[in-house]
Each structure stands twice: as C-alpha cells, then as structure tokens.
Image 1 (cartoon, one colour):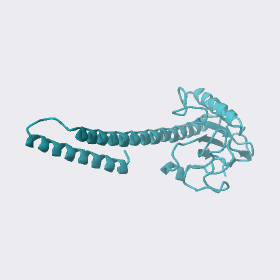
Image 2 (image 1 turned 45 degrees about the horizontal axis):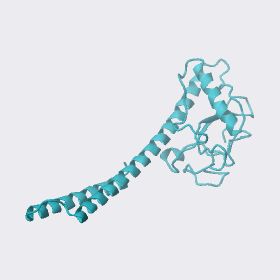
Image 3 (image 1 turned 180 degrees about the vertical axis):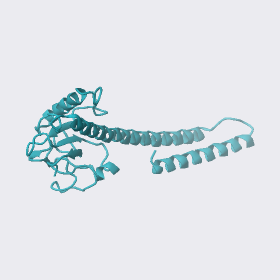
Image 4 (image 1 turned 90 degrees about the vertical axis):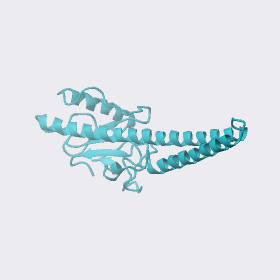
Length: 219
C-alpha cells in the first residue's frame, strides 16, 4: 500500500478508535444503554470512508502488480532470446516477422513463443495479465541489415510512470520498420513525449509504451 494511503488509513483508524472510546464513556455515564441514531450514523460513515480508502489502495496495488509482471515477462523473454542465439547454429534470433501491423505483431509474439518452446528454452504460454484486445504482448524482428539480428518486444503498462520506464526502448522504429502505434515505443524522441514515463503510444489500435529492443537495428 502506498505511504499516502497508509497514513490516511492510520488516521481513520485513530479517529474511529477515539469516537468509539468516547461513546463507551458516554454509555457508562448514563443509565440507559445503546447508541443514538446520530452516533450510529457517524460510525457507519467512518467505516465507509475507511473501506473506500482500502479499496482504492488495493486497486492501485493490483495495477502496479500487473505492470510489474508485464515488465518481468518481457525481460524473461529477452533473456530467453539470448539463450536461443547462443544455441542457434547461425547465431541469429528466431524468425517471427517484421510487420508493424498491431494484429500481426500479436501473431508474431505467438510465433516467438513457439520458436522458444521448440528447443525447450521456455515452457507454456506467456500472455498479458489481462489479455484483452488492447492489453497484449507483441514482437517483431528487424527488416534492415542482417535479418533477425535484432528484435523488439512491446506491451502497454497501466501506470504512466514506473522505475522501469526510465530504461526501456523509446524509439518509434526497429531498423526501418515502425513499431505498432503512431509514436512507437515513444516516451522520448522522435515522439516528443516525456522520457522516463510510460505515457507513449496510446493512440494506436494496440497501444505500446514499454519496449525492449536488442541488436544493431535498435535506434
């Protein structure tokens, strides 16, 4: 839970504890027992506020958890690709395609997983935690220079700024091939957005803003 939410929650618990202690003293001081309607409404209101704070904090934590998994998935596949190159007789990455069409890049991600499962470098499937129409993983290799000497992995994060965004690939192309969306991976030039924030290509059919690119074709 973020420190700000934790502080709000702690203050709410403190206030509620004081209110309950005060009502206990009042109850012990008068002959008849039971809360008044106003007292019950106050307690219910405090409980509702605390519940809302907890739900917001949990929602934020889940969002960041999904983003952490996305970054981890792409890093793990990038590592698997280096293992693939070490084992490959030609020393090149697998054939997955150079298309920048979003739908095809998604298909190319599946082809990449198939290529890595062949030599048993990975097992099973690797997909976005939500895996909706726009929250998917995508991949392509370069279309200039030595074929399959470079690759790009891309996804869209739900948060605009994470520590990982400061070190990801920020260009709009891999070699001469544009990345799926108008701004490519683009927090930085040439998209003209803020480097270090995952606020990049949110306008395309399949938004991408967190990317990993490796090889000589990467800008």
